[in-house]
Length: 157
Length: 404
Ligand SMILES: Cc1cc2nc3c(=O)[nH]c(=O)nc-3n(C[C@H](O)[C@H](O)[C@H](O)COP(=O)(O)O)c2cc1C
Ligand code: SF4
Ligand code: FES
Image 1 (cartoon, helix red, strand yellow):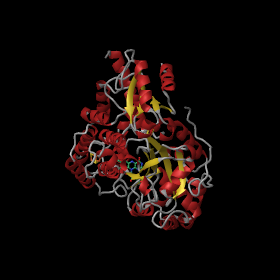
Image 2 (cartoon, chains in turn orange, brown):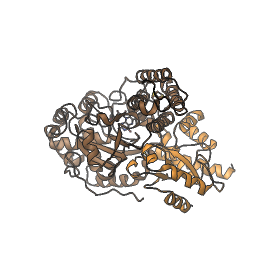
Image 3 (cartoon, helix red, strand yellow):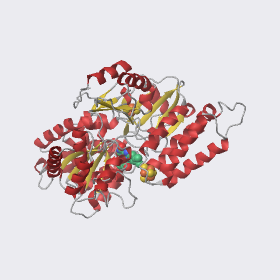
Image 4 (cartoon, chains in turn orange, green):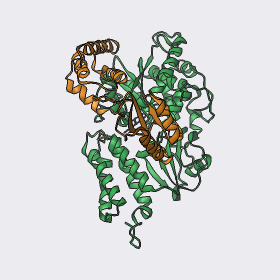
């Protein structure tokens, strides 16, 4: 990482600590903010957060590794999470899976070469009456069919 | 899909009945703490998050606790497969949920409310924040609420980050404290030692929404609906094979077959009551009623018609538990994987009946030996599906053999 990038990340984290506080209970909120912007929490970010919260970096890592929405390695600019749980499964999730994989040329768990999209499965999204369902970043899309899902994915930048 | 708070008002006996923002809080101030607790107790309200603990008892314990700070936590982690009623309450009836939190704060003497909103519901965050800002302007939140000296209460919203187990109340508290969402040993219970060590009431979204109505209209009114052991009404999240999936408010005690009729379910073979953690009810038992004393459910109702393969359904549930187990204790971490091995063996036809019986025994051990509700309930679907559909599942390749 460039020195300049490091400085700006440090500053960003300092601001988050000002916003959420330097107590332990601020940790998850700080991690969520970094994740939202950078799509991962880098080693350097983890060290900075640990330093400012006065905890061990391993503590920070262990929290990241627990939550499925946090990660320490970079992901695509857009994270697509398709619900794989039973009601969406019965509503035709498999057809959406096939179409999306074919269109993007990757499988679930992977990121497109251009870094545009990461595909993941997730569990029930609380939209079971309107399945199949997926989240694109934090937005929810319901009543998917193969074509609709592919169109949505082709729109994201 | 653009998400806004909606005004699409539904109708129903209790939760979806008439209510105006602030009415419950005004009535609460008029009644005073003792009377609120009396009405709650009289109402017989039990927790709607799944465990069914009497709400008045929880509130009395925390009201009695002596501490300089107390917290009200609204559990909006709604992660049980097939559950989406809290989504509807938050988006369409936020006044019921937030008024309920204010009433809880007033009753037990807490000044801070926290909504733990699942990360998957981040799209609701801004609309809900905007709503809270409006409520603050109207002085139904903030300092000296309704002009009453020292009636201070405010609410903040915190997001989860994609972990089903964080819906378990002690895991939720760990998560709020910035830690891994691993369930704690209980006791101590959150009512005494909760968020940051302070007395904390954790209630489900629907429980809090029910409280607003109960305080306004009385425990007697609430009890008119439902059964002796399951008073009031319940929101059911209905999905799967039916014409009209969605959220329905029905009195407790409604029979499964009545519900199926209402939602337009045809050729139904089984109903999963209570989500992946619940039990699978075959059609021979559709006379059973929904309630804490019979077919219990936090609200999830998933319907399967005759075309569904129950082994596939079970496999989907077990995948869920393997992914969502926090891995802290052995019965759950290893047990779920063993049950999955069994499912795969059945799929490939390489199983013996004694092996399946051993797995059911393992399931029963998990029910008692796991540390939290996740591992205690994950074998429910395994046991109920294998017992109720053994013909279909086990005898397919074993024609002529007697049942297990
Ligand atoms: C694995 C697991 C997940 C849970 N998820 C939720 C949930 O999403 N929402 C909820 O209200 N309760 C959930 N619970 C139940 C809570 O632990 C707790 O009993 C409940 O929030 C108490 O509120 P109530 O008394 O109003 O029902 C869960 C329990 C377990 C074991
Ligand atoms: S039962 Fe499962 S989820 Fe609960 S504490 Fe044990 S490993 Fe974690
Ligand atoms: S099963 Fe897909 S949203 Fe619930």
